[in-house]
Image (tube, rainbow, N blue to C red):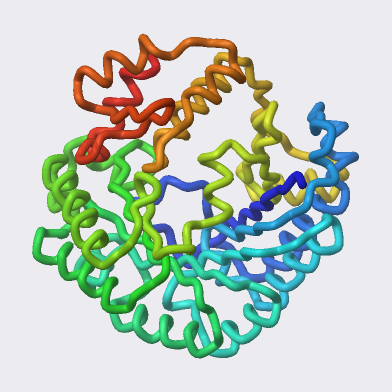
Length: 389
């Protein structure tokens, strides 16, 4: 049976965090309903919209069974529960589905008992929390709306509503973060025992206010209090140790899970399984093509309302680019990749590529299985750069 993931992008936030480089905006709640209507309309009219945009779905994908839905953003938990229920209903109405995992991204301060009960009634069974830190000073410096107490309050509400699969996000490298405060965040997280954990290193680029300030050598947005690269690497290693001791399985470079709780939807990305994205800025992958909708929410609503899909990027994958994705995305998984399968499918020999990495102690080889060597996950970017040469 061919399966398919559905991603829905909700590009709205209460405020813009200083480190955020996503295409999101702070808008009036009056814009939520028209946006949701267009997302549902894009699902219903996808075949016509894809054809007009020059997107050809492979045979079998058009009727694949949807088993995961991920509603991300932005802050999708800002939407009325009825809006979220309408999105989930649209998936059921427009696709063959056996929904095993429906994830909603939520910020702690947006969670109420009424919302949580409605989410569960709509079928949402997994919540991904943008915790980022348990330290109020760090949260304030980053422009986050919630505080430590909100995390505990929201987690209790979700458990009380029957959500048995909760994921927490943490960011290593926030302004004012120290070894002590980072360990406190990790210990606090373990105490709440979420089923899943994601740890991301602070991204520094021109796309965020903090990143741009750091690159200019400025001091605004507490840029002078951002930990250095060595400290961030140390924080990551500490996370590996603390989460490992708490019996979380490290299954992808940035992700840990209790047994049986790896993100089914996100695994599709790393395994190059197909998924369709709906909404402004949403990305899709058919197995042979990748495409993305335009990021501007108002432009997206206008285009879909007029019967057009505002595709901003459309890439037909070559065998060479598909092979690079197999290697890069596959090695992000701590379980590794089956090189024998890849060589058979692509008609190539990869021995020379892996020999260099093997001799440098960066990978581990067992038969046709190749994975990052123990203790080398923190330098995975070096492995990927060398592998693509």
